[in-house]
Figure (cartoon, helix red, strand yellow):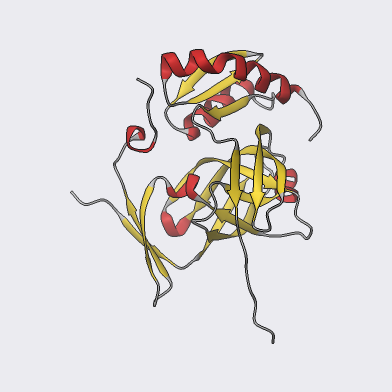
Length: 139
Length: 81
């Protein structure tokens, strides 16, 4: 049986939810970025949502700067993709406030994605491939 | 970044990592109170477990295949109006 397919533009509406019950969520502009290895956002947003960091990473930016970046666990919803789950996001101290969130390969891992250049559309295909397909095992 | 309790969890994780990889392979590891709590096949399960059992306590969730450096290459060009 064929899996689900979604079609989106390069930008999608994303909502990040607070860890605190009753706190407001934040609506963001998601940008599909196959050049990014992670999901990445402005650190102001993580602070506004009261997220608790669950890792620390080094992230190389487009201009070659390497910056320290806390990783946060956050519930993310993307209606255009029927997505509602917890993800790890890297927060970067950006010079200017930004409501954009890069949807990098750590997010795209769960889909097979085709890009239609003339239409500027992405086709997301659900995949049933399990973790073994994506990560090398030592065993 | 300022050193905090997460740094201690990361240091504990580094010491635990060879054993975690040997026993569990390619997984998301949840480390809290300097101990491996549980491993998970997907991040969302680890995050929800951490929320349910540790609340706002600082814990580490990291994949055993993590790379040392992540990339966030984003450039947006606007035409002049």
